[in-house]
Image 1: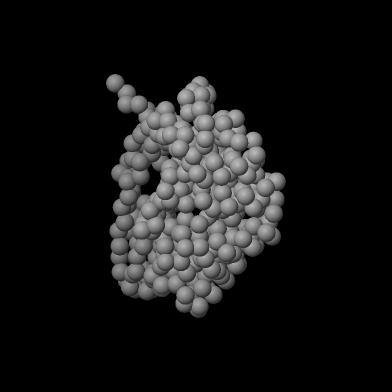
Image 2: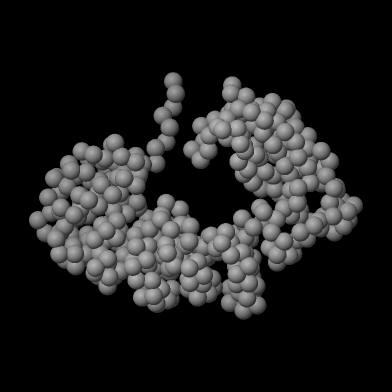
Length: 375
């Protein structure tokens, strides 16, 4: 018997969650018809994808909240559960069932900027409003960035994170915003010294987004932060590596220099040794490689698999293999077993000749091919 695959949309938005939301609204909205609200949502929910479910609930809210937007905002705030635990410092994203409130505010609040932003401020303490705030950035960029400068010093770390996450150039699951990618940098200057990993991770992800447009400005910013010394050295080192992860994979020369790695490492490599050159979908391609340092080197060793696409072209994807500090003449052997998922949600696996390349500080040192069969 096949096990049923996990469904994120059903986990986050289901009858129990809708009932919970209905209960919140029943306590905050006078005369709220909980049964009618829940019935209207559940009548359509099952057929929809995740983001469509958020939009559905927001649409149903429009018929159950006051027609006056400012009154509706007061009703939403009165319905909210307590803020997320302020004693935590990471991995406390909140409950997705709060997301439709943000969708409602984003769709109905552009003409009521102050009320809308005040509501998003309260909402983000329960569930991140990084997507909902983006239409307001586009509509009132200067005013919103000025407001964010205040929020960057808020006592609630969820609010501070929103300042970085909401202005990210390539925020997942969200449309791009129109402002220049460099415009939020003064906000990141404030936030990079935050003592909360939830905030600093967002700052690092934000910088990684910018590297895809202007890598030089990111390197300049990170160098300046290092000189300023406002963040703990260990945390700033972690942020730097996380912010530059895309450039590291590309072997970006200035990035390697900033991290203390030679962009042209003096290292030689034996051929890649495959356990088998033919692998079926769902199995693993296992390999090893031996590296010899011809000088003292700090190495970031990655491997790239060029996956065959449906049309026969290839799509490269980079993975981590290891970090090494090697003295001249030292030899190291690295081994990896990479599972080729037949049912991956982020890509489709097709049969054909795939390429495997090992890099040291972004420089290719060895490559080989292997075959993927359909079964």
